Amino acid sequence: MNLYWRGLAVLMALLFWGGSLTAAPLDDFVAALKDGTPDVDVITGFEYKHRDDATSPGQQFSIRTRVGYKTATFFNTAAYVQLHNVSNIMEQYRFTSNGKTYGNLGRDVIADPDGSRIQQIYLDFTGVPDTLVRVGRQDIVLDDARLMGDVDWRLNGQSFDAASITNTSIQDVKLYAAYVQKVNTISLDSLDLDGFYLFNAAYSGLKNHTISLHTYLLDTESTADSARDSATYGFRIDGKTAPFSYYLDYSHQSNFADGEDHNADMVNVYVAGKINNMFTLGVGYSYISGQNGSDRAFDTLFSTAHKFNGFADQFLGTNGGDLRDGLHDYYVQATTQAFGAKLVLAYHYFDTTENDFFDGTYGDEIDALLIKPLAENLNFTVKYAYFMQDDSSSNGYLNPTRDTEILSVRLQFKY
Image 1 (cartoon, rainbow, N blue to C red):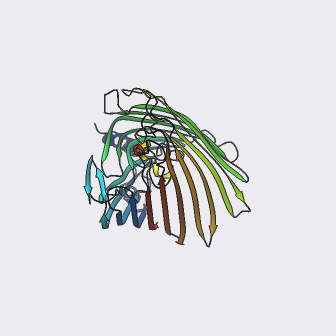
Image 2 (cartoon, helix red, strand yellow; image 1 turned 60 degrees about the vertical axis):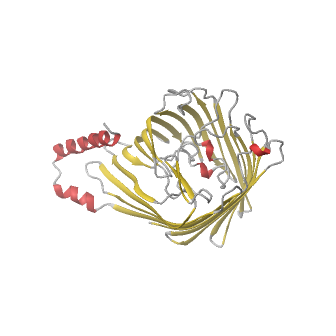
Image 3 (cartoon, rainbow, N blue to C red; image 1 turned 90 degrees about the vertical axis):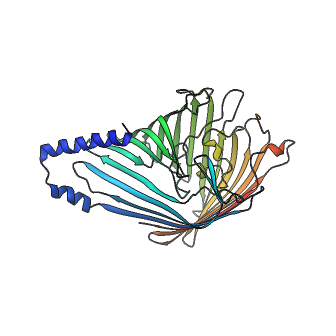
């Protein structure tokens, strides 16, 4: 039986079992439907992408609309549904979906096909103290989204068909567990899984600090030795000690289910400090191991990969473990507030960790981000990235990156 129907059957049984004890009238159910909370999220955006290859620049002007509604609680149960649509006014780009390429084949890739779907639809049950049980299609973002995220920068985003439990019965501890059956991707297609098991525990009892542990067990439908199946274990520390803030995380990946030759690591560290209460200056380093002999590259699972390793998206192959030569990412970042706007500037230097395919420096990148609130529910965003490929090494022609320039301009209304 499908995950949806199993979960819905359980929650409906709980609901009506409760109803037999309290005999809640029909008008309470109708009131729960009427007294719910709507939400609206509309993005009008333009994106320009120029990659130094045989194709022409890609351009897209789109409107993304999400409309949701969550009912009030009825016998400890509430329902939520969110409808999603991307409509392209300008569609001068190509994209992939279900393994095929569509759109303007002579243009660069922009990963936002137009179309509609149900982005989220789930039931929440809160009948157990300090516990939320959620069954259905849902967003899942854990820690900083480095391994599990909603990829919300892309217009279609990512959601999961899953059953999850969140418990906060222990003081300063948040326990989370989930079983995922399907991934709904940014390409408006989906990936069925035999099972993806998520466990995350976070402790916030130390002042201005959070410590979390995670275990993620991925079992795809493939039974081959080359399957993506893996077990990922690790921790994250996120803290502030004025005037500094920092985070450190580490994850190790090993074999699970049918997948073999998983023995990989990922490390991320970042430290930032305020200067005269005007600027925040930070330095960071990311290490992602690549192919080393028979050991496969680290797989960042279903992360919001765009958030990391530069806005030019040169290293999205970390999702899936396809970055064969790994990654050293050394970066500095400056943030300031001026005229009611937030400005972020960053510089990245990217190098390989292995030499299985390409042995050398990938290149460097300059990023800029401007966020300006225009009204209570209206934000204006400009994001720019310029990646410069390094071709100085003797085998530079094997460098998987290319000079790339990306400009995104967005106006978002969210209520």
